[in-house]
Image (cartoon, rainbow, N blue to C red):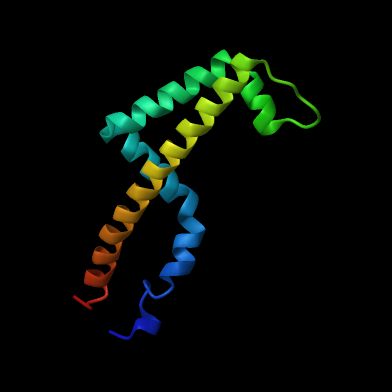
Length: 110
């Protein structure tokens, strides 16, 4: 099979076009299968709902001041965001391996 004529040849372009859907799929997979991920996301949501100033810091504009409690909540929220992102990145890494194996089988390389 000639790769140039294969519908799988433009894999990087297809991945770039479909990345948002893939990313959402990965997050759904994690939410359903990884208790740590689910717990971190729940905790993050609870903190942001209890402290609306977090959204103002992340999405707003202009000057803002924080109380000591809000500052601690923001720091915890940011720590959780990093942990969540690390779990997502790890899952993406493993998902990439799985998808690569499937792709190589499909084009007849293995």
